[in-house]
Length: 287
Image (cartoon, rainbow, N blue to C red; front, top):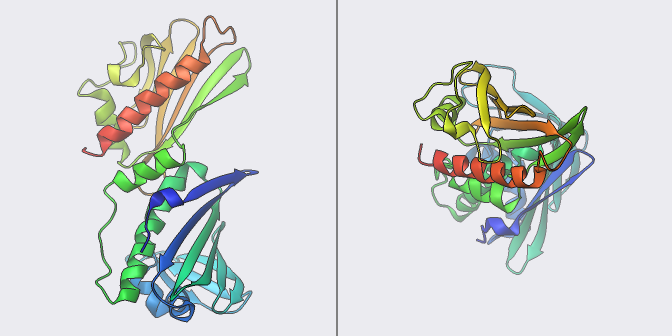
């Protein structure tokens, strides 16, 4: 079975991101169809327990084992046995298409969602799920264990999710990064502070800085979720760690500065921060 993550892609249009994953399975379409529509089979490889009324407009329910809440709901949007099964899951849409491929099948998933920064989490999760589906169809043990982070990071690199943006704001420019990480906020904070807890009015620990943002004093700190400091007298740098996709903390980093490129070289700052964040993400794999 081809499970090369480099065959996968994401596209974003009008704020909605579509993740496309294509895999060859060594089983005919009818066999694959049963495995992706029968709740008993889904329970072995899909990320949640599923109930489904297998008809367009039918109701779906998603419930994670051990979760005492009501679970999530969805609606079947397409049923064309054994070629197409599609449904909503909350605000997301998932389309599973099956085409004959020699003596096997080509399974294509298109997952459409609103959180582009979460694309690596979704891709790594589906990668593992479809691998489990393949093993189930082959009659092999299904559980391969969770991703320790390496698969997530390979998708983040593949999809270019480490890039920042530059925005024009009142009085100047703002650099912004949003990056899903693979460890919780407490672990990320420990990696950034390296044992030197930030204190308002004191110098910033080196882990929160780059050479493109000469650091002034800390102005606000709420460990382990946020830190703000002045750089020179032109602007601020702010780190925030919020909830993400469930893989770890979501990092939001912003740097504000003057509009004058001689005093705020945004291209150089973008490159410096991307290098810093990628070094952090790589280091977290062993944390």
